[in-house]
Length: 154
Image (tube, rainbow, N blue to C red; front, side, top):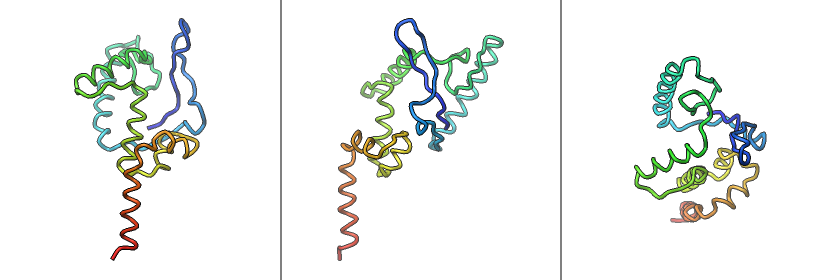
C-alpha cells in the first residue's frame, strides 16, 4: 500500500483539498495483511464496474476508494458508512480516525515491537508511539519477565 496524499476539508465553503502527507516520513509504502488482498481485489472489480457505468463522467484520480464517479469520498459520507458498518457489527462506535489507534493498539497487544508500529504509523519518534499507546504495553512487561525466567530459570 502506498500513502502518497491526504484529503481534508478546509473551513466552511472551501471544500475538499488534496495535499501531501504532513511529513516526508508520512509518505509510506507498507505491506498489507494477506487477508486483505481478496477484499481489495473484489473492490477493484467493483470499481471497474463503476468506472464503466460512469463512462465519460468518471474522473480518474488514481485513488483506491472513490465515489461511483471516481472522485474523492466526502468525509461525512465515509463517517456515515463507518457508523453503518459498526452498527451492523454490533460493536462500540468509534470515529474514523480511531481506526488508526485501534490498529496500533492491536499490533502492540499482539507483541509487535513498538519500533515497527512507529514505522507503520509514520511517527517520527518512538516516544510519540509509546506515549500514545503505552497503555497497551503492560502485557509486554509480563512477556519481558517471562523471557528473564527463560534466561535465569532452572
